[in-house]
Image (tube, rainbow, N blue to C red; front, side, top):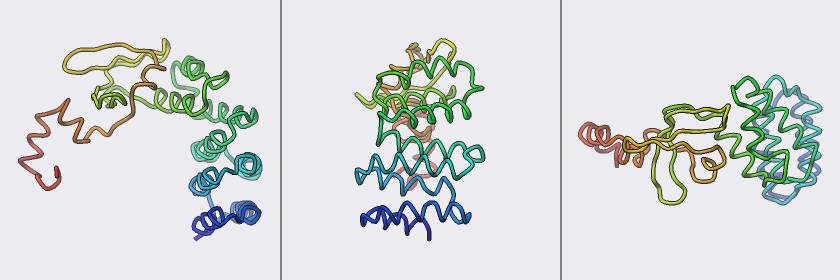
Length: 213
């Protein structure tokens, strides 16, 4: 499989061959942008920041990013994390976020809050964009500090504010604070059921004890 071949080349240090095969496989149509994410992450872990930045730009020049902007964004994110001072990658990342989320109300507010155009660390900026542009009412989050689970009650992206609910109480916090304090968690996670929906947990224990375990 093409992906396995690229992963092996990245792990073995065959970087020149990795680059040429990426372009060959994309041109032949046997590899998609989305399939490149894993191999690119392997290259990033190998410390090949400059090479990865250059290859990402070459790939996007030879592939139509408009056909799959989500996959193109996933690739560029990997490269930007590896080379956070690369202004071309930063601009491309912003363009792809705008293509994917530009029609989302409050997009520019969230973009500004992320600090991706300024001095904010790239990983933090990307996390804020991903979390705050994709969150919807009803989604659940878990505190990075104490495993406290909350539910997203309301979102005002125009003001960059998120209202979180727990035990009947709500609190409204700005986007950077949501990103700093919380991670997304699946709504059927045991911790969500135990803290927010104990009645569902009781039902699960009765109806599917093996599944709960």
